[in-house]
Image (cartoon, rainbow, N blue to C red):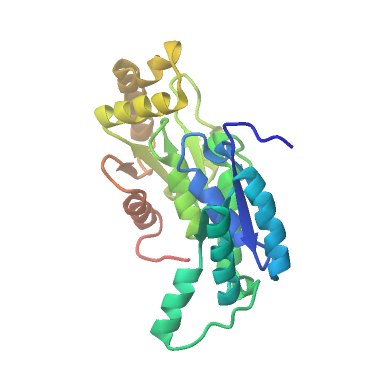
Length: 279
């Protein structure tokens, strides 16, 4: 199968199911302009022998794929690193450095059991479920998940709704986000959930103009798309958002200007849950 030139191959390799690594890759890809569509991710699970590893690496070499892995066996990690160096393949070890550091700190050798990451309990499965939830209910595509959402983010385009949803999902919170578009009515379903779960997001107009202009440049958009970063349009959108927020005074509103995703996420959790964190 030929891979489109604009979709780079990524091979996820694991001695277990590979779900942990794949979810991390998917979350990372949301930070890029084209999101998951920028890469073709293929998962290889239960890779536990050198023979299995060699078969995967041979395919990777043919496609010039990046290898991202959660190989817990130190022997296999070293073998993988050596073979990738020989084949001039880029490899990213998601757990090796962490395991080595914890082994030194705890003065204990890890058991190196493939698939044991699934034994971390309810938190692990809650996070996986939350990531799947965020992907499914991104950008107001489907409002059926609203009753199950822990947090609902509302804001105009490029106010960090999606990356913030994914970050909070990695913390185990189910997040649904809804875009604010002038002339488009808010989903009436929003009125049927506890209003304290809903958080409005805003941003300073000059910063938003920079973000949108950069995105258009990355996408190679031109012509009528320039209106997306037009300051006048941005001011109209922000004025509309401000009016919506005034009509819903029980929604806390956060200005994301100059804030990292981590900082904004902390503020969202403070507003919704106070200092009590369920995760």
